[in-house]
Length: 278
Image (cartoon, rainbow, N blue to C red; front, side, top):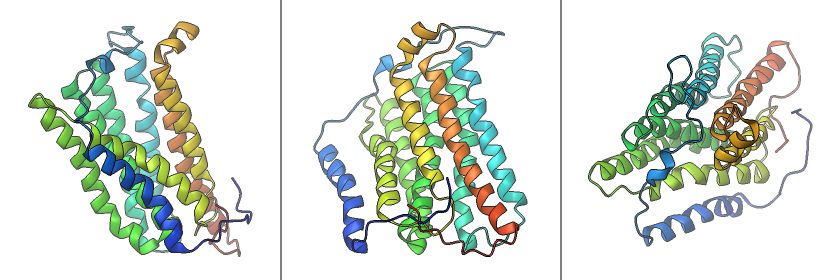
């Protein structure tokens, strides 16, 4: 996680942009012709069914505290930051604020959902999740591809993300829920962000911390898929428990990145804040 200079791919900006956009456009076209994707009722059947201290599904509920903690620490850091040059444009802070606020709300929404898992409560889990995904996408666009575009896209991305969950929720209430657009909102950023990290150089030091976010989140998704198997193996902790923990650690990488960036500048380091590493 250093600010050492490394090579980047020297293709034209337009070509790089096309590479990033093409998978999303292809997925959108395919899903437009795909039948609606309903919510699988079995999704709510999590492996951890332990009731501890009167809290049902204790592990899945309590591990959401990680999101609350990281969200609060991130908001606290932004609020009390001492270096006005932490961001080259003050508007860049807005996306980070939304990201940490989304994390905190994700902890609340997910805990509320896991107390009694059902599609109605799942809405309050998924809605704040879209805030974190869309704000992160805006952040990486801003710091890698185009500062002006990333800042301008924050609000539209948030509206698209929230709209995908509202669309699914309203359909679910009417008996014809459709997860197609939420699926794009959740998974496309996890494809576009690594591509931008590879194709574009960072404008800031310690940009490699974004790889930590991706790595921990990938591990979290693997644990989610192995929910039952992890519980059978460990006995006291499930895959979904670990999903929350590892995703929180991934989010903590963002706090660490900002702290390192701020410490570098606040210590009167004379090096440029522009980082050449991917």
